[in-house]
Length: 258
Ligand SMILES: C[S@@+](CC[C@H](N)C(=O)[O-])C[C@H]1O[C@@H](n2cnc3c(N)ncnc32)[C@H](O)[C@@H]1O
Image (cartoon, rainbow, N blue to C red; front, side, top):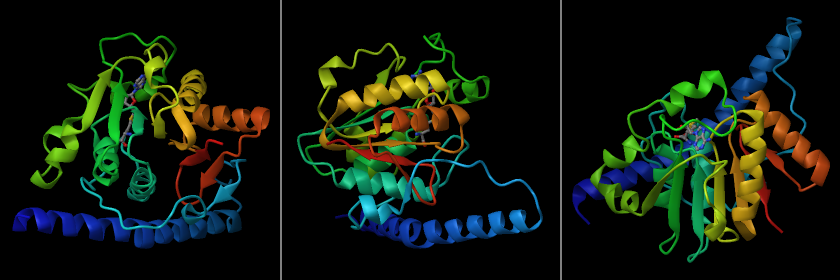
């Protein structure tokens, strides 16, 4: 291995370690402390969520992960969430697929790919800015749709990750109308992070549950952050008792298919 690449990979392993065992517990403790202070001052609590909370280690095996493109832009997941996604990707079995709804700049797709075992294909879908969405999206998320091209980070990533970036297939379309049928039952992991409007959160959840294979995992982003996502996931759990759980210290919801 070239020295430059070995160094990039060592930095990525250190970033993975820090994200899971440093950043995540410290940011969780800081948030708990801030909420305690708010309560003491009689200020309203942060929005209450209803799904059961678990720690990441209750649902995913601990193993070394690598994280690259760690700088967060507006619209990206937090570093701790990127680490949990990387762990989930590392557990997917060869021959299955990883599917992401909502590419944005490709940061999550790239980190899923660098942690996925060989023989796993990775695909990510994004809505082109000039395609009207079939359902209403939130006005405030238009800024994530309106970009010159999705997946910019896939094209400018470091040499160490070029081969993994090349494994990612970018699809263009609307998650509500995209023809997913040839991928049903094939995904070891689906990551739902497209539109955060209620109708999309419901529709994308149905899609994700069809895409996943037995024992495969679905992860949703922005639970407790975007009201549409929170409502859709809580209604789904109330209606179907699937066992959706909220991963503590993140806005991720986890479900493993039976
Ligand atoms: C918050 S960003 C995803 C962020 C990304 N997972 C990350 O952390 O780097 C949401 C993305 O979903 C895309 N999107 C919104 N509505 C969509 C739809 N109906 N179908 C497909 N993609 C959609 C947006 O264009 C945007 O790129």
